[in-house]
Image: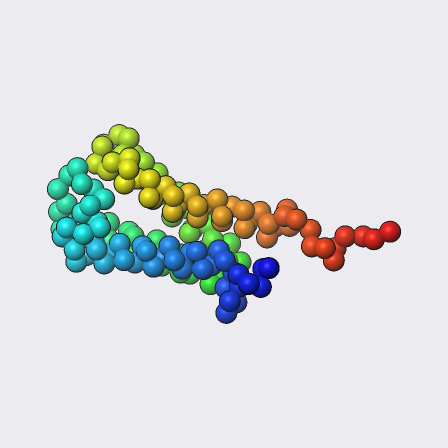
Length: 144
């Protein structure tokens, strides 16, 4: 079953991170070049200035790069930690924007919660299982 999810040496979590990185890359392009596109729609409660859009784009591109790096280097602890923290920081920032400053609606925040939440839970489970805390392989059980 695990072989079905691994293609070209990339496990399922890696493919998920590639998909998230691709989504983030599209968001970056929207923030850089689209005045009324995805980036402007996220922060609908305030007028989006050019500087704000470019700042969000660069921040998002950095997190996109981390997703791609982590997808191909799941065993690198520093890259894995930086990618995980990028999800924590993004979700925390957007949560504060929603709850404190009211610049993003809860409905728009739900998409980010789904993507970041799924990524963080999956990364925590992957890390736990790769540290030897997951189910033991069948060949490791003793037969008496």
